[in-house]
Amino acid sequence: MRKIFKKALLTAGFVAMACGGSVQAAGDPIKGKILFEGCAGCHGRPGYTNAFPRYHVPLVAGQSGAYTVAALTAYAAGNRNHMSMEGNALSLTEENRVHIGAYLEGFKLTKVSHEITGNPKAGKKKAASCAGCHGGKGVGSDKNYPHLAGQYESYLVHAINQYKSGKRKSPIMTGMVSSLTEEDILDIAAFYANQKKGLPVFSR
Image 1 (cartoon, helix red, strand yellow):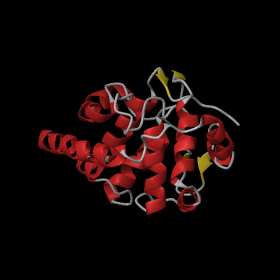
Image 2 (cartoon, helix red, strand yellow; image 1 turned 90 degrees about the horizontal axis):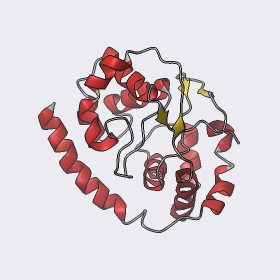
Image 3 (cartoon, helix red, strand yellow; image 1 turned 135 degrees about the vertical axis):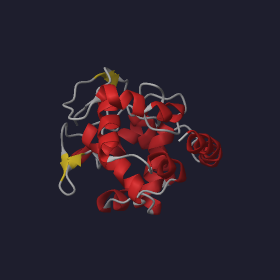
Image 4 (cartoon, helix red, strand yellow; image 1 turned 90 degrees about the vertical axis):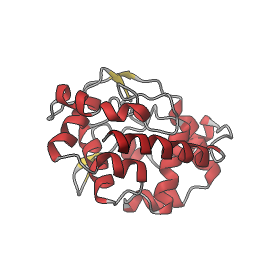
């Protein structure tokens, strides 16, 4: 695991440099708010779930602009698998993705409380190797990586399983999660979902 983590950090440097040029321009949060109206039908409904497979639609307010742009770009490129997200991301210009990112970044992290089923205490130990990118409590300093603190447990489980199966393309994440068991994944997700301060739940 240590070797995988070192390799992941090295790769992360190249990913950050590759992404850097596309997210340097400042977005307009006012334009982003207008553009986000098309996203709020799912992401602006607290506790809303995907139909199948069933998991909570992720919280996106409070994520960094750089990560939001990277995520939308990944959906548009087919590196993330979700029919409606792929279509929505493809309809956005790169400039519009930056505007949406600027809008979402304007939300502050706040007190959260989610129902969890995994073991957050065990998850803390298992998530130790994730801290290099995501921070010790799920809020990293590098804006190219997502905040995990306060994210829905079921969504984190879904995302990790997507990386493990290869449905999401990321050499870093695939290497990091390849040896995780179902119990490991649930416990890690519980640890991040159980943080006292994290991504806010907001409604349209």
